[in-house]
Length: 140
Image 1 (cartoon, rainbow, N blue to C red):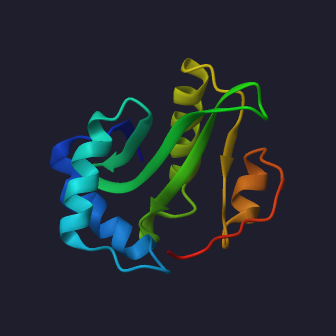
Image 2: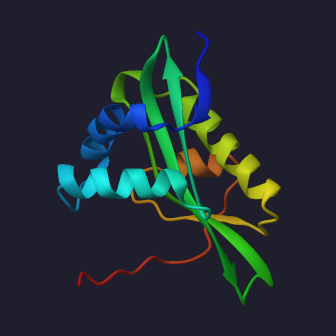
């Protein structure tokens, strides 16, 4: 199996939308909001979105950001979303997507990569991540 990890393109929108809808558990992904966000994220200097492609089919994606911080004395990267289609899980695709995001973070001089998870702690621990904080949120 040869999976290609590459930067997302505008032509990936429908496939990423389908994956995002399957990923979301707290919100319903609205088509129009997604379309606006997707186009903007592709051109954002502080965002990185990559897809995993097999046989011209997008089977996963990662989306994250880079921002300046005080606590780390510089930039940090944050993985906002990572999703691999159910039939493609446990085949190393999530690992490849995380490696791509980490590579991007290193090229930008980030001091660390952070993320929040509810269901995939074992996956991130296997990649060398360590638990660091408790995640809180407030819906507005």
